[in-house]
Image (cartoon, rainbow, N blue to C red; front, side, top):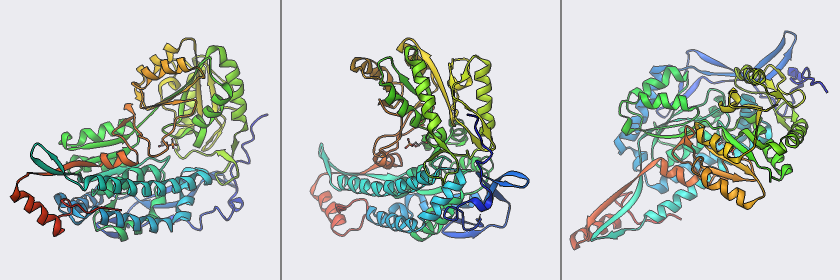
Length: 539
Ligand code: G3H
């Protein structure tokens, strides 16, 4: 049946009141040095991926504007973060862990109050379904709570002394300094906070630049940052990344760069720092996760998981399955079941019940995906599902492309959208070679019911990627699991516990164990005069 996209986008009056934004959000304040500063300069107009049907045709709905600050404001925010850190002597980096936890708990309570506003903005800014936008908010709150619990554990483990070779030491984790934090558009709240919150709670001070798509949703949260943390501890920077970020890096005052985004940008930014050895980078970058469906796979299960893995949130997850290798003997059957399952996916506006395919926020993406499809077709592939690749404005109907080969863009490029390249293979060695040669190394999914075959793949593949999934799609969660990657896919490890380690360094206080030093240590501990050297136990 031909695809009728003419009714896809609503007229203004057809947007259900419960999901409409009460009003456009025109942000004219930003948080820097503990103050909400007014902005009277240029602004960026935020266009939703959701279009509205008007007498003049489809128009992306304007949902608001935000400040386009410049290098001067970014430099002032950097100065504020540097001053708040004060070479590790600031109020925040020297505060006790218990007090920092208290502040983060207060922050959590305040942002929960803003849930409805933030969830709606996620939906309008990036087109994520209302259900997934809500999940993103809830997952973020759970992540913060789990981070607090993990820090309490860590602190309890560090509240004792270690004695070795006549030396006594207390070993704890200390902050690193000023953290420049930039999150991605696809999980603008969650992935930003999975770096920002651990960095913050460990005593660092923060410069935070919201993603280009997914900016306004932070506006309702700025007051909570201002209310809960000492001035200069969290500072926001708005503006064009390429205009404001280079000078920050070149200043040499950034101690940690944390970016969830592209490896190209991360590469360039790191090189701008004048003292590379002083810079720690915690990065979540590109990925091209493969599914490998062997001749011994449960096909029904593989289809279910591959649909979820490749098309949840329109394929815009760093963990999405971005290429599917299927044993040639199963290829026809796989394609028939897979395209039938794709056919069942409901497309529409993100507030509609049961919808899973929605418009895309990146304006250039529909054209880029068409370019990938044209390239694949020119090199011998066809689109196997009916209507695959049809598009209207910001919406692209998923395309299942087969047979994809090494000459095509889709073989190596991270499409980050609703296009599913399928590659036939004869020998499992071909799939291992693909992963060895790939510039990415995040995760892989193996589909097979043969234990020997799976075992033979696990050993080579754990040394190519950082997570091997058996009979299930790739994913980040549960968030307590380590999330990282090899090659151009990541630097450092995130998880509730690992992130606390990533944003801190072990420091210790040590002395020779003699009567005089014992007395000194006891005096310091009894008088509670140090937050570091302390045996206080956090419950
Ligand atoms: O975009 C990358 C996200 O961290 C993926 O998280 O696997 O839970 O969707 P997810």
